[in-house]
Length: 264
Image 1: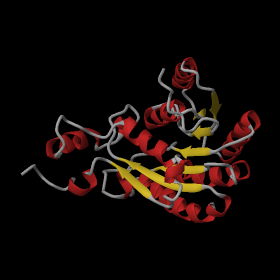
Image 2: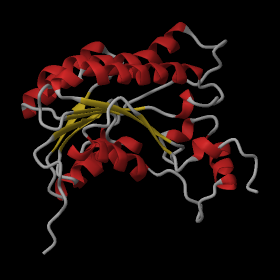
Image 3: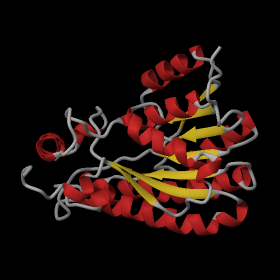
Image 4: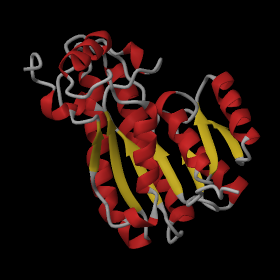
């Protein structure tokens, strides 16, 4: 009989935006490693309920938590809800994000504020409110998810880049400020992932074609949801406890050779 590998058994993990796309992949991975998974979603209950049923059938304890992270009250209630239901929180993955694609010259103040609130401010508030139930917990992790808008120009993604840049900087500071409480903070930057969530990016179709055209990897390999989820899970291991304050890019090396016009 094969004993399942469950290094996160006994841990409670909250994944914001955890019902779709990369978030769903992270929820599945943490569940497969034995964690109790708290899945946050904002307005689409169908995917959240289906993922919950899937994971429960596999023996995972799952709770669903509806909360809008652009609302400070919603963030606080989310953490309170997790704490009340589980009495603990060991892993918090801030994956939720939203944007408005627009040229900066055409963007409105409301659009700017919405994108900032959902990404940067939500990251700060999640850490602030989660600290009381995460501090000094065995294997405590605070992991944020950014994207490539902060490292290369993507048309009409200036608002997103500014907000994700703030998220990355906050993660750096949180890695320092949370360390005395035994909480390890890191950031993960996935490459271009082919999910419905990312199909709204203006550069999506071109980005996929370009990456496939110049990639040195055989077989049409690109970044997958599982690639990103694997790295998040690895950061939760005790063996990774001395990796802190890092932004880890998961793109097969595309950041290094993405500027090549064609394979030579």
